[in-house]
Image (tube, rainbow, N blue to C red; front, side, top):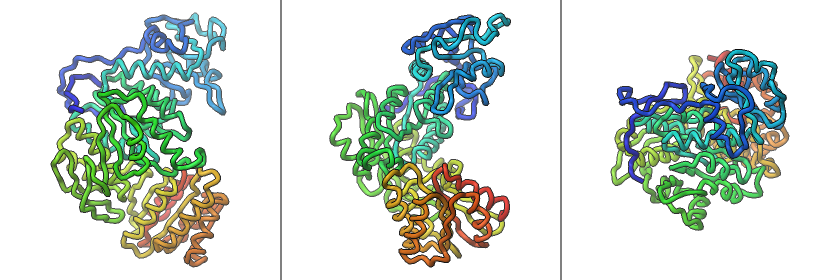
Length: 504
């Protein structure tokens, strides 16, 4: 893949847009989302304008009346526990310039506001989710942006964030915020391409087969990135191999101009690449095996990150990665491969990597004035990542190593066995004090840690984070190194906030 050529664009600065080269000549204005244009874009959903002016322009798109801004288009999405159409009138009362609703849900004049000056637009569609996706794909095509899509069992967000920072050295970049990476969140992210960035970096998330295929169809990525295959969401699949098959949907709909950035160290990825005739270019990254972008002479520095010699495009640099663990080194290598494909020099990549910071609750190092250090990895958890985090604690000098581990969700029938594995890992990695929070599977983790050699008085089990928090705050001491990690549903991040507030 040739390096992306520079283009001149105009972009309004937003939270998820990184502006560069502000002196660029302005040639490409933002895409105007008029009612007529939106209806045409949503054509496959049978969209039609039933009220309001066809030239009414929308300032953005929202699916949430809590955050909808005046002038935006509200798309009424039906979820498992809500029906967005029931909130359409509320969206208009909050200033929405228009709504997209299921066909036949409302009579004309809609919501009793059709006679007002600048009456809001009403667009009806057979399926509002399909309409949202069609709008996003049309904007993606019209924007002219290069789209990079990242999938994998772990590391998607870190890879996305680091890649966006590296690409911003040369290009105007947009990235999806938070976890907007599913069949609804991804379209909302792609709609921001109306701002005409040069590059978009997005995540593709999934927990069922077929979801990545849908997201690839919407995003039509120029560059696909496959970070790894692991045991996250194992409860929804028969095996890790089945997860790999679902992740392999990232290879679909590729063309000869498509690039794939793939992990050479992952056996399941390698096997599926051998079995697939990928039509585009494949760029590999890795640590343990030969790869196009490879780290050698790796030095683990515990919670201070890693250093390594990184080779790409026949050039080698010394790279210091401040993010915790070898998994994050692998994520940085993936981001390096992406940036190299877009013509960013390896020396510039190394300089920027040395200054990256982890995303919130994803391996943040919090040093309290009381002398305590927290490894805040509370955003989410899976068995592989949990064991890797415990190994990092073992490699870091500390007076005491404390682990606060929340239950790992979405593991199905495998939950007890995988939690027991983590309990044994806690004992093996010399954890001095273990707090475990969650249901029966978490209790099995605690019992396994004791059975593997941890003193029973050093292992404390709680059903809820509310019950655990006070004991954790009281149990830690000055000089402790404290890992906090668990699935989001367990809310281990509340422990971090309590420690900051009461022990900071």
